[in-house]
Length: 212
Image (cartoon, rainbow, N blue to C red; front, top):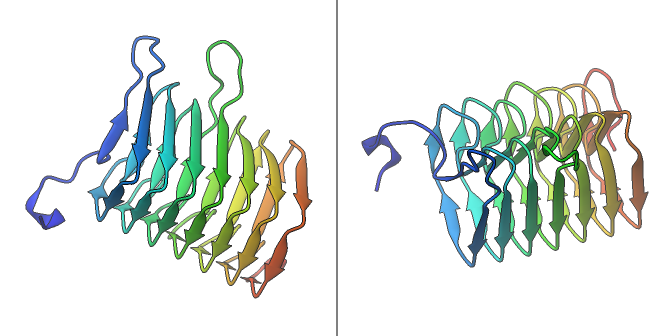
């Protein structure tokens, strides 16, 4: 149906993980598209310490005035394989926003993206057009294309902050645009940044430069 026919609230799919539970939501060979929200995560919200697994799926055209157009994760793990996240819109983290709160037993939350495409997502008022990671997140981006994403501030493709770690391997960052710095990738974090066998091409940045 038309999204305008329904009340605008939270995400289409929510993993609440309340009362200490750590449930896992698996989304396989599915489409989550054209959902609208006023809250974090228009498509998928991982609201607690649980896990979200996205495999061979498309998360597209979801819009929120908050953070994480396709996926918002408070804590826990988000695993994305062989999937496409495209044309999603949010304040910050147009595609994925991983907030990075530590899991209660002290484990760091993970965001693993492999064999996937992060494309044409937009952060309209913040950073991380494709992906935004914060606090204690460990990000692994492998065999993935990050292209044509836009951010109002830093990190047209990917933005990492605070204590996040970022490992990028065999990836492509192309034609992403940042309003300030880091057209492809912007790392403003204490954690390690590792980039191997990755191509940066045609990315652009504004005031602070750093097209790559």
